[in-house]
Image 1 (tube, helix red, strand yellow):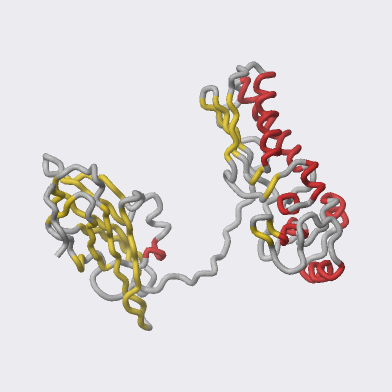
Image 2: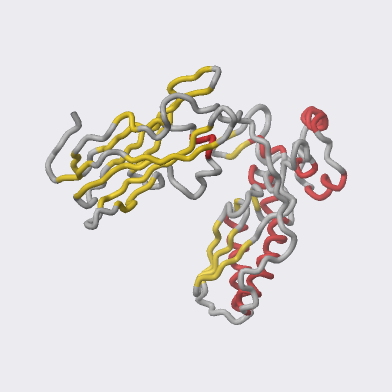
Length: 329
């Protein structure tokens, strides 16, 4: 990362004496940098004319500060080709990549009407990618281009390889090259406390019997700390809105992934043994929702004093969505 990385952008300037366009550096900040990690001559030569403020590519304590292997990906849907890039391309860098991909596609038999689009920040993040000329100026984006002045050309080279395979039909979801390195990072958040208190899943506040469209349905449940069961709930939802069908069977029609719902957990009590929490389930009834009988359903886990997680589920009493203008009491 170069000096101008700290300078910030035109619409959000940085701090201290740092300014954009710095290709000289500072003896004082070099000494501060060297106390953290002095860059190698190889890295200084590789990144010239960037004055290096942080040699992130050579720091691996406690883990690597920058990815050394990143994913590039090309997808085709009919005449549309999507380049999934693991970083932020400048406007001109993006144009050059897009033009190179299309040129390769056409050279290998695809129609000139093929549309190429770029999807940024895909799969991982490797900061900025600018053109060689933009890199020489060392504004914020150039200073944040972590693989040196030829970064864009490296991406163009790899995407040309993928574009040729796409055009010739020789690539069907294959993985090419060395896989990125993954690390099991240690989090700084402490583990969730033991769940204590009322029986989990118990409905503390039931919804009203009737609501109109546009109203907000609410119910409160005794709820284990959701942070303690995040991995167990992956791919599931903590709340659902269920509608009663003509055969009497309930069908899930909304979940906590919908804009009209909200799942809010709060710790209510805390002690040496653990803590007790409650969750408020809210549903803003859409104006086009069907009239009929509904209920809210909650899924979750609670953790005992030995750290064991136990699942539970519970639903509210039924309530009606009606045409009349009912209000909450």
